[in-house]
Length: 396
Image (cartoon, rainbow, N blue to C red; front, top):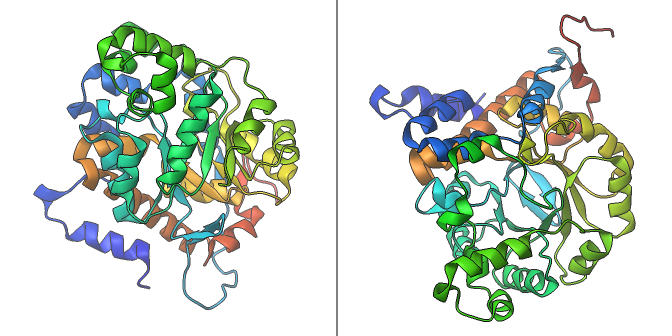
């Protein structure tokens, strides 16, 4: 059976020992630790508070088990991991999650990440808090599917300017992140005294933005300190509500997704306000500790939406099996974050591409074992997953 996953396996077996890149999340993470400064590694790896939510995201996947039926019937036909989202078809259900400030990980930052995603055939969600500007990232990604992620600014003129620039640069959807009114309490960063914004990471799209510069009233290069202070005031938005989100939705004809939804009532409100998609996420446990694992929230959101708009998933995805489990619970597509950031740190563009190809290959092989030829087969087989308590036994 010559499938994508089998081909990638064969390629990996054939690589000479001295040229092998890491395989698997743990290996990429360990390799990244050796090349990143301790404060940067902890910034990427760390979470809010005691990091209970970050660990709970991983534990939720561990407690959800696959229950394959190896003799079940499989329709004949080519294997297909592609998914259609907003009129475009993507070769796999994976997307690069929007991770900002990547210049602290690699000199080319988001440009290298986008190039790696392009080589792997993966769609890319580009953070507004990039170290490289959105136009430059769009050029690196070429004709591939790219979406733009926005933190709503407290000044709506700046939000509108960023949206207009994204439209002009060929981004095909807008993702509004709503779960970060302010930066979370992250002890690792506080112990190091490491704040990427102070090192110039994450400000790129703003310092060159005409609306930001007009509101600032002077050239940011003339007073970097005051420019940073104004940027942080713009970024903080602790009164964000549906009216502000609806105003942003009305700024564009692009599909607009809301990222950071965990409660079914918020999913229903998004439907009522005319949004086009949802991303179930707790921000990887980076901003508020003690939050429900995103995977546990996913089924309730899927039920609330009832197929009317696509539900995507983010937070805690580390393996192809994780992708399969999230899709079996109803996710249309899955965003991956930390794994590709470690790939970027270890081997730049090639590292991002390798991490993504490995994830898709693992998903493909897992689907073969689960007797699923297409992603639709996964969605149509809710009995594929079973949640068990530790030490528990299944009931059929």
